[in-house]
Length: 343
Image (cartoon, rainbow, N blue to C red):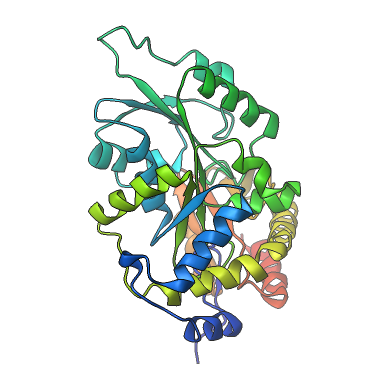
């Protein structure tokens, strides 16, 4: 019998619920490369409508949807503006350079969130041949490396006005966008109106086993379909996976605040402990904390592993724990006792 492991490395480690498995097995499928999978089509239509956007494309991963968007909006030699903590820069295998031949202008924001003024100061003069053309501004909401922090809506609106004024594309890496929407009780259509393209992930907080969607105009998605094919992302009877995404959108969005509550309670428990030097402010389902000098991530990880807890080290003295639908209330209570007992 498998030990009762509490896996907090990421919200990608979830397994489909029994009801989600049933939906997958009952899915009506077809060849999605030909546009003939009815379940994929239903998912794409539902996701686009949810955000008030024209169209959507189902892909295997959020990395693919982000990289398709970057290629969609840029030409080789162009420049992408993003934060130094951005997933598209740090964790997508150098895809901006490899796939699109674009360079990157990194901004130093507040835990991954920069301002419209910072962007304005970093738009290149398009008439100066020394510099790449600034073509795209990309933000991540919530910011993974920033501890799951949420962007201020008014700042996004200022960025939208700026990008429109300078005729720049505006992309949202919404890997954990549903966490932000749940925490702020925002309507998805509010954000859908502010971006040219949005990537949303189904396999993080929503608990699907695979899949992300790129949202945009009909023309964007028509072109994105071709890029997906060139990236090797064309899938055949993908409706089995799309059915999990449909189930997740219908049943798992509204429980995300439970994960947020657990994260806040864990942060409150960790705060007075001697081995914790600092905790990033907790807004959603991610807890990032810095260990005190003399306590190594390796030692804490070994202790946690001995107690059937998995966590992640994400940098010098930095630890991350992420909550998701597979963490039960009894597991959470056990976790609090385990972290309190570490010496």
